[in-house]
Length: 318
Length: 306
Image (cartoon, rainbow over all chains, first blue to last red; front, top):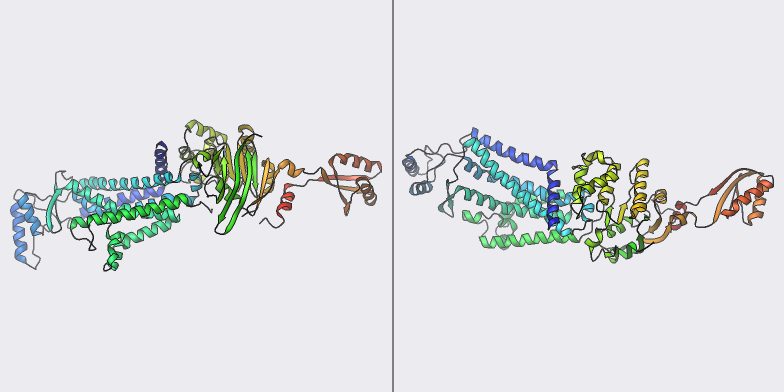
């Protein structure tokens, strides 16, 4: 076990001594700060000021009446971010006072950057084994008294650690940058959302954390896929290209095969587990349990292929 | 010589229907430098890759310090240090970090030991530099340092002098000799450069088309027969030729002023003395050393080297 820890240390040393790793980290920071600045400049995107005075209930009530009276015509309203009559009603009934756009909203919005973290993790996952072949260092790596399985496992664990680090960095940085630009939100803040047509509320902290973790499922599936391709074909570009291509086209693939009986078994019909939180799944016949089962099967398949090829195949050629 | 440090037992490799290595059998002992010689594509690198477990053997086994590479890879490989083909290191890390990386993969290597090895290969002043900035010679030395970290009893170096300048080659040669003679390490060196092998090795195994066709000690290879080929330049030529034929009882060939014949080494002085007594003027006497290159070409046939 102690030498496994040494292997993890080695993988981290190699990863963080490469410029590319730092460039990716800087890109993430620039993206967070950039989008924050953009939101700050254009307040319309963040929905303007909400009713936060003592008489916020009356104001929301008034807006609700305007909204219902207007019918089809979009009315001239004071609070453009609060156009859902039911949600406004829910807030009034449950005494959930609206809050101005703050660090929590910024964290919630920045969940879209998980795609960027996925991209970086795919690059790392593809490179961590295939680069050893490209550099030729694999030959020196494998002539040690350590099994190939253990070396591959150390690499995989390092990829997962990298993904978690980046995800955590995204979350914390978003909160910090959000606090600086929009003001820090309270941890006791409540978030109101609709799930399967029903209005619910949750603590903002646990809500955002669970959202990020749900995204992590998709991230780790794609990273594992890239890791597998790299271990099987020993080619960084192929692994990165294929994984990114599938990540981009995943939803189109689903749409294309939507009518087919077997569509629900496609990986991408199941990767986004938050579809079950919001109510309607993409493909009929799936459920949370079903998706988890399908994901588990794919995961085991990817791992078996990666391990099978990496530990059995000869290291030949230059 | 005592127990062999490494034994190859009927090692075979078949890829598809093609038999790449056709059953190699040989032993390597501590303190010797064993040369693995053969033309490109003869199977040198494939054999070395099987020795260190990078490639699987189709049949047979390699025993290192009594441990089977097939059945107890970890037990066998811990006695081995090596460079397979080029000394490829992580170019984006310093020399020191590269060594730390490999040191972590084996138990019980202290920082002191790393420093010791660095000193041995004379890279003390360049350890903080990135390997990407190293010359090939420096990388080769770092490669040897990496291979020596755990004090292996077998050192396997695939083409260790590849791409080095003459002074670099001489240095590597000196390291290798010292390791074998002073530390008792068994060193296996592969090469297709004959003169190189001749200077470095104690024994040379010649491989051709996946077959070990001969193992020669370097001493043998050069002086296998006591009969030497001697060339003499002397006047008058005709008289000399007759005299030589009488003395040796063998054929003497003539190429312009140069007469060539074979004779036992011990007889050369008396032959020369006789010629002088007959009033023949001798300008030069040369013993044509049969080099390994001739031997090698004899064994594998001309045209086998690309």
